[in-house]
Image (cartoon, rainbow, N blue to C red):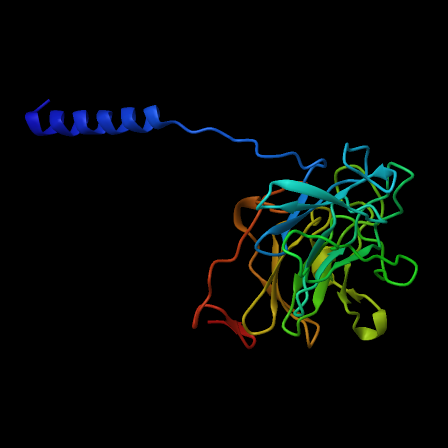
Length: 274
């Protein structure tokens, strides 16, 4: 080893030793009281946690809680009184800032109602500590048109929520009782869900389909190895090439996805990819 290489090696070794000496650790700052299967930041100081309706230690109104409001400033939690089971629901924000949770599961405890048609609303909360902030539910009068578990949802161009796919019943592993349709909140099309050929083609591996709003008002949708651009206003699917090498990206072969920032000309415009 020459002198220059030796000096480089010594410098690298010193750097590694310094980093190792510094170390790192997880610091527990509080207890959530429920498992945060879903975590939604709703303000600079607050996040909502949703769990499966089960016998978690956090309670409210003499029953277990499966919703909670976490305070980033105080590292404390307050229970939210949900009505329906939010297990493996999804959601998003309307343009007015209201957080909407949709879908869910058949509950395992009697304290919860069936969440598969659930719509849960959390309006903008004016108190920084979450005092007086609540979830609104009215399952009898405010619900999805279809039962949906493992559904996906995004905010679209008009500020509403598009709800995509899911499964009707709690069946093992694959989507053997599919909801091959799309609906909206607030509802469109007279409240009648739109059938989706894309969801039909991607069975049985299309739970939690990946859905992204694009700058031109359309949506990129991915399930199994299928990919489309969906024109929401015209209800037209433009089929894109399959994901190569037999890769399937949705549940139960569950990956994740994110959309990088887009700028012209590298996003879908009109009826073709530029």
